Every structure is written in C-alpha cells, then in structure tokens.
Length: 155
Image (cartoon, rainbow, N blue to C red; front, side, top):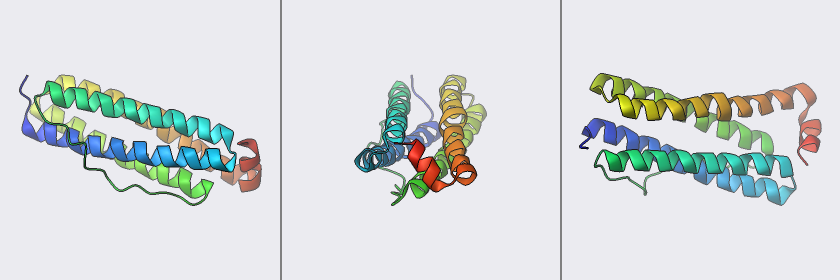
C-alpha cells in the first residue's frame, strides 16, 4: 500500500529515535551490569528489548507503506557517567520520543492514515505508561531515600 511521504518521513524520524534509545539502553544496561547493579541491568536490558520491538514495528509499517526504513540515522545518544544521570538521560529521551510520537499521531490524523495512527498510539502508551513512568519513579526514589540507599537496593 503506497503511503504518504510525510508519514513515511515522520516514521523514519521515529525510527531514528528508537534506534538511539536502543543504543543508549544497551550501553547503560552494560554499565549497570559492570558496576554490579543487577536490578537496574535487568530492567534496562528489558527496555532495550522493548525499544527493539518498537523499531521493528516502525520498520514493518514503513515497509508496508512502501517506504525505505532509514537504519543509519540516529538521534543523539546521551551516555551518563553515574546512575542518576543515566536515568535522567533515559527519561529525557523518552520525553522526546513521546513528543515525536504525538506529532506523528497528529500528522496521521491530518493525513487520514488511521492504521498508522493506531500503531503509533500503542508505542506512545508504552513510552508514557511504562518507560517514562518507571524512570520518573526511580528518580523520585533517589530523592526520597537518598542515592546510597537507592543504589544499595539495586544490587
């Protein structure tokens, strides 16, 4: 099915963000593992897998719309040097992805591509209700219990 180019372009922009999120979660998960923060490693490795699934859905939809997925472009990756910065960087990325998803959903509505909109709404729910929410919780816990207590709980 021939899709509209503005939607394919928006989907490729989203793909660039999801690929960057994969890269960022991958390195952060490996850093957590190296530091011995097993619980953070497990959760962020899970987030890596989720982002891979998001990228797959976008690639499938771009191909369905007879577009070419851009696998080379990435949005900037922000690697933290400590746990709190890493969590904050991941949260910022999720906020940016959420904003881009909302803009793409609005474009789909404007272009009357309701099926693509449905796909993107699923990604948005996962981004806001799972990824961003969990990261916000972790940063709130650091403030409530202190950094050292939080880190001890992640071993």
